[in-house]
Length: 247
Image 1 (cartoon, helix red, strand yellow):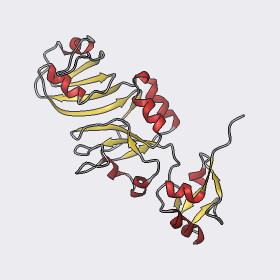
Image 2: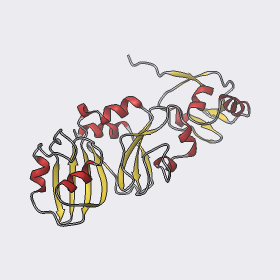
Image 3: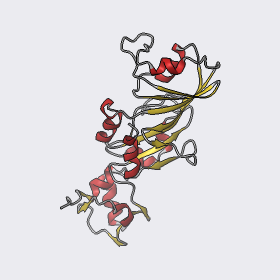
Image 4: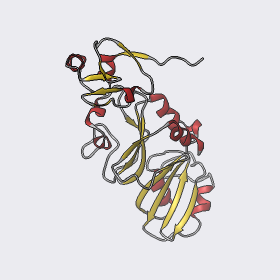
């Protein structure tokens, strides 16, 4: 027998989703602006079952309820944006609806892409899922397309796959990585860990310089060709499973 969905007070749920304080939510309910199955909800302190179909059944101010806690989304991160809540300049969170930036638990990035790296970035408010994705035990590979300053020499694939490569200032060798040469100055690199600026440092150790860097896959999940920079997409259960299918 499947477990019934968890339940939460309506005012707490909507406050946690960023709709305002509990008092704000109470005012929304009192004004008839929160509907369930087309009928105004009578009590702000009533308990609501957090069923998967609730966003399809409930509206707030005439619009569908935001995704329930446990969301995960894929963002095509543009260049120049930082994966941070606090740093100066454009932040990846600025592409999300303003209300989503007030959610509790907060939405966080699953790992980071540096300011000058574009591409597939996952974001979630599910701390357990976040840690599962980034855990070395999950072995979620990450694939990057690197545009290089100089033509490849030809020995980089063997070097990266050796499992003995050391980065400057480190004592632990890198895990074996797979390099696919696309053009003399263009390559795909799949890595199985996430050290600081790892891809850039790997090519630097091989005597080259990364001019452009773009992540196009995590695990078995590809960045869709129709997802433009700055656009995001909520992921379904099949998408989440695909992340771990590529390990």
